[in-house]
Length: 176
Image (cartoon, rainbow, N blue to C red; front, side, top):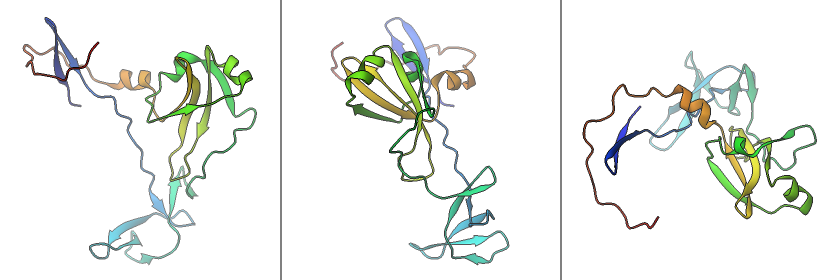
């Protein structure tokens, strides 16, 4: 993990990025037998089994021993597959995607101090997100992500000592 230094007035701050670790699911055939991608030429790829025999069928992903195809886009979340939670839980998510939302009046009133939590897929791969819809200022937003900040903070190793000296650099002219 890389740590950077920041001079904040007379104080020194060490910081490191919190990046979600993306888990790649292994490639497999329709029976769940693992296959491996290889380069046939500069721009052409093929697939083969561990024993070297080539595979030309549909490529799936192996998830907990089950062969799965690409997810379809979430278009409906039935009753019982979502729940209302505290609004702060939504902002514990490392949001990979933000969307502005328009809500009906009933749901807008419900979400003034709460968030709704659900599972969501974009339909373009094998990634499943935690989804939250909540208020943000005068607007409503949908946040999608795979990792919680609180869980990542607990897994980061903090350096034993702060830096002795920070380098001051000229920055942009943003107003506070």
